[in-house]
Image (cartoon, rainbow, N blue to C red; front, top):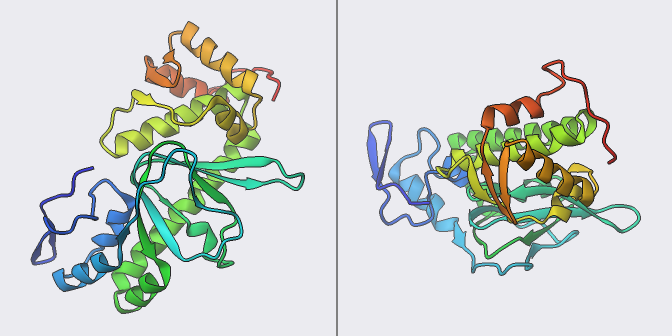
Length: 260
């Protein structure tokens, strides 16, 4: 993600060459450039943003139960979040790609309800939440943008519940691939050619499917010409048909019986 050279805010043109942490394709950018903020306020916001050292693959950003101190934006790489079930098993709750935020779910209880682990070498931006709160009290536009981002996270959680509760195995995997496609496209990457940093086990855990079912579905999608799969590399060959699979029920197609 490359930072823009300038951005027009009202009647002001703010030069951003020296603001290294504001990236135009990042959710954090919506906090960095809320409508109505002037150059001095932008500088003040930039000062509280920290660039963390990169996380190595398998390294944790935070663990379950740790005190909530900051929200994070993924600059590069990817993060898996997960919680533990009552019997101690890991339950994957999300995959976070470049430009996406995490840590917002810890605001309510002031501690992290889930853990976050790097799926590959990952760099992040960090915003200490106490400083962000203080700044947003003086900048209403900043507070408004934060609420919009939190609302979007709620909508994402609702979509996940519908995905797990109402769709067949085929529809679930197709919907996840379409979600990744759209999220990559939004950040300026290819929507049809990308790398899956998460394992088949993680995908199955997230979708509520056995890993054997996930592997079988990838093979079936490839045989049907929807995808080309080479280990973790995915090339979507037929995006319209993949959308049709993800929305099979709405299109009136029979639901396949799959073991989950």
